[in-house]
Length: 238
Image 1 (cartoon, helix red, strand yellow):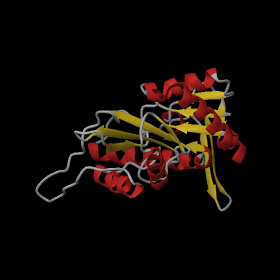
Image 2: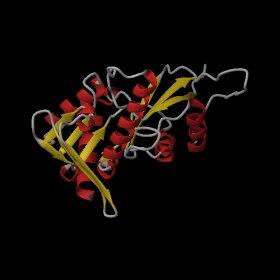
Image 3: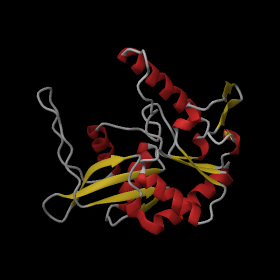
Image 4: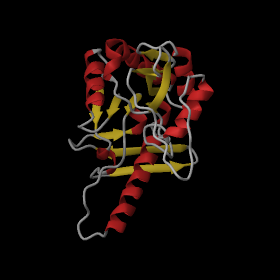
């Protein structure tokens, strides 16, 4: 089976789910990440042979990690409401513990996930703008000057002219820096990356930011076709 992990308010994730379903990817499940950690009954096993989980879904079915052939992972963070009779400190501690649990569960699916979870992001590493800029420069993308000091906070250049989507070595969106965008995604360790570009006052496009959980809709049907094939490939590799 295949999964799209996203919250109900994630319009891009819902769009991808609908597009994959129309392309015949089946069985395909749409699952909020919170259903994994708030399951009424679950088992999570970690030993020398690996890690796995089983979780009872709200409709009573049991989801086992071993049955997942591929997953579009758009888990942002563990969503929990206010805890009754808990201080803010205790609530913050509970959120961290639940995030750690969700990260461990997602790691069971890492081999077939787009994107893989990591310690700095449940759906790929989140980096400060300055770090993204350094990676972009290493990848060969033109970047704007960055000035950092203890007296001021650097603000990234505002996106304004377009976004490129990178998926598994393919680029969607009009950009003359296709190879550089692919290189940036590889340096970032992500299968799927959104890269913002802007014009620097002339004709040159300049790096303006990156996002491991981007809006997918600008990629259109071509992106959905590639995502379908990419998920099928993950299933075969497993």
